[in-house]
Length: 89
Length: 467
Image 1 (cartoon, rainbow over the protein chains, first blue to last red):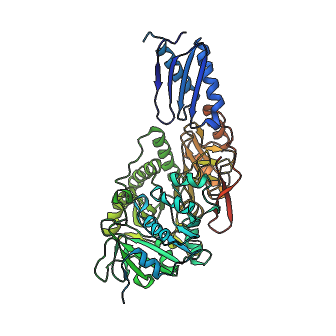
Image 2: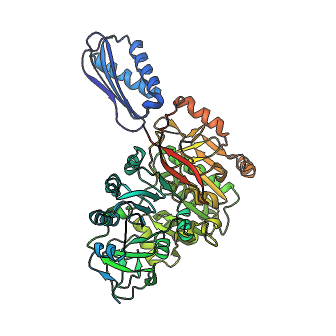
Image 3: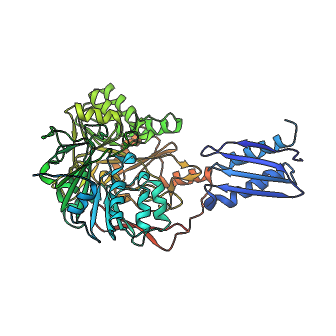
């Protein structure tokens, strides 16, 4: 799936995550801020990469501001951002 | 005899405050307090250094204290609670000596027995007369009870009353009497009323909080303690207040008349008094306007000192007559130790206050907390800081089940008989981590920034800096 435009999903509420996705220049760049980075940073990055892969996104800049969201929430927010960024919405 | 001084500066001069001495403050003006900052600014301007500040609690309104620490005016801090903004400064290591955390009972115990003597106490008084009789109930800066200030006034070598409401002698219905007071300073304002008392504290509307609160009330109902003469304390957190509301409904429905409600008092406890759930309220601190109005007007709502509230050095303390207390936690471990001093990243953001005192005294000590906050499980292997030892905690109520401390087999059986959803605390931890994942441990710093002193004396735990 190709990211054609800037898109976002989620909120900055506690226990949610805010995700921004932008067209990339050939590779994946992930920028992560999280209130639980020490405790869950690796898992969150894995989850983001996982969703990008599942959706066959190969080029994107993605910024995630995590406010302590559960993994299922992070996955859902990233997926929504991807779907909004592909240009059909 | 004239006790009125021209300024705070004159009071400091007359009190003979010198380098290395100890001064004290009480926290009834909470986040609206001006007095601590006014006094500290004068002291700093006078060039006095190396002081110990003994304050019953410190709020973010007291952020300028960090500057006085960095400049060497203050080198030791003794307190029962530090709010998150100022707590962060301590956690980042601004002070060489560790903060000494005590409890609301341990502090007056150590003051009254001379372990932590006070040279000059500063009493913020919403009303005072020229001889220093003072009260928290009257005036534009009214805060209600002045319970934490009694020990300071009674045991300090010199006591200064600072008021913005000087009334004719004698002030009727005073809290602290003139025989303890050396000087009276009049200022324009001792605090910002908006920060002193909150409006009506609201109960939670969060469905998770309501489930926990309903379960908490059911635990009390099933405990065997809820009968005529029942006594109760609860915190001002949303879920604790909701639990009080559910408890009130049960008490009214069953026609139970309790003996007393204790604590920091909120409008919800006042409502319970008015509805006939209790005969009295015993109040060491008012949290909201309804509580201030009630303590002023209703003789059943009585002020108590922190010594009477919780001091282990007193001949008796109210906490030892308490049936049930509902308390909060930032973390609780599988041995039921509770942390209320730091957040899960190790930053100081609170303190025991009366947590350990009431937990030690009450027949049933209940922790109410959600299974997780912002992905971090409440139940851990080992809390970041032991604020209250697990031996004093009976039960943990979460939305995912009720965990009873194995030391209280009778309670476990009672809750089982009442068909409440009990769960082993290890199981609760596993159930939560299945949803959140298992958090990696935060590395500890290498410098002790605070010591948690047990209410009976001795160091209970140490808090390290955050890297």
